[in-house]
Each structure stands twice: as structure tokens, then as C-alpha cells.
Length: 170
Image (cartoon, rainbow, N blue to C red):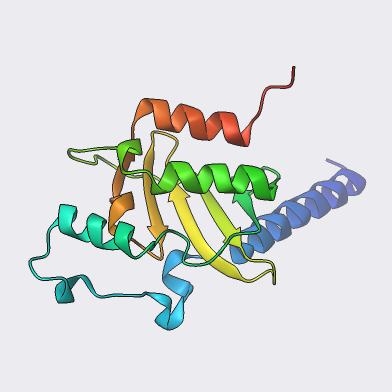
């Protein structure tokens, strides 16, 4: 291999490495985001810690994910794929799916492998919530509320979420 090809391959390798590092460092880990004292209650103070009571408690007090109004969200799909910015209207549709208890199924979760992060922003461009999602439907959101369960979206709900993210043009 001549020197010119070695230089070209070296530069390409360097660029790909920089892209992977930049994208990897850019992604926000749920464990690294602090939502401060925004959590409005402690489940242990709600008597017996049961799912139904906690969901009723959240509904009565209008506690929803995220804890403040989202202006938009960005879907981070991995290191090599372009992020998708979702407008305010579709962001609210995503939040509706995530906050609906009927969107989730009961049972064992299985093996979770994070494919995407949905990062929610307020009007000041501050992160107010993150949902990690496995394209098999497994989700985890922070800040966590009980209505969302830690678990798996039903097939219909995952399909609805995909149709919101990737709308079909008429």
C-alpha cells in the first residue's frame, strides 16, 4: 500500500473515531442527570406502597412525566445515525403514550437493550426528562413516576410511538 492510501485510511479512521467519541460523550446517561427536588412526593408517604394507590395519587395531583411542560424532544438513535428533533405537538403525543398506564403490559421484562434515548427539553432548552427505549418496547424514564411502570410497551403502543416519530406523509 502506498503512503497516500495509508494517509487517507488514517484520516478516515481518525474522523470515525472522533465521531464515535463525540457522539458517545454527547449522550446523556440517566444516571448522570439530576432532576433535583422536582419529585413532588415520596411513595412511602402514601401509606401502603401499591401500584394502584400510587397511580391514583399521581392522577389526583396531576403528576405526569416529565414534571414540567416539554417544548420539544430529540431522539438519539445511536452513534452513527442522525438525531431526530420532534416538534412540540408530536412531543406531547409521545408524552401521552408514555403516561398512559394502558400503554404498558404486565409481566417479566426480559432482557433490556437500550436502542434510543428520547430527551425532553423545556422552553429554556433544559433537559426535563429522558426515556430510554429498547425497540422491543422496553422503556425506562427519569424522572420516574409509577403510572409509567418500568417495563414494556404493548405492541399497539410501540406502534403508535413509531408512527408519531416517523409520520407517514399523505
